[in-house]
Length: 197
Image (cartoon, rainbow, N blue to C red; front, side):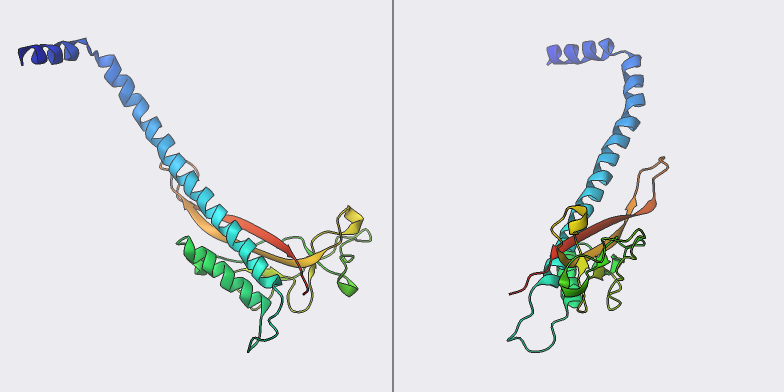
């Protein structure tokens, strides 16, 4: 027991005040880095979730209509239901999702479901509008008219389909930083080619 007390006493005498001061100076920086890693990790998780939700929404929107199902099969409603399910599975509130402030630059497909409407004549075509039946997500390419996902004029295959996009608010909290306690909007967009069966 005496040897133990002597070792502790010697260790305490060997520790200088400069090491304690250095630790006190480094600790706040270390804590800020750890807090930043946590909040950036949360933002990355939410971004991954809304990207997955947009992809699931686009997949649900282009699914062929069920010939034997009763009732109507609304592509835009199918997209919103899929987005809600994906957000709920990740414990995110689907009612906080919003249509993006700037619409994705997808254009309506030309006649005969060929992606020619975007192969402009010198003027930039207007983006397809969002389906007005959805307030929380932007579904472009429903209601009988698909949107051009790629054009043969730009080297693409000339496919038509549906685009689903949304933005989700995220409040980043980092004390003492200029970005601290501000709400940013994470955006996600997914496109799916229309399939016919």
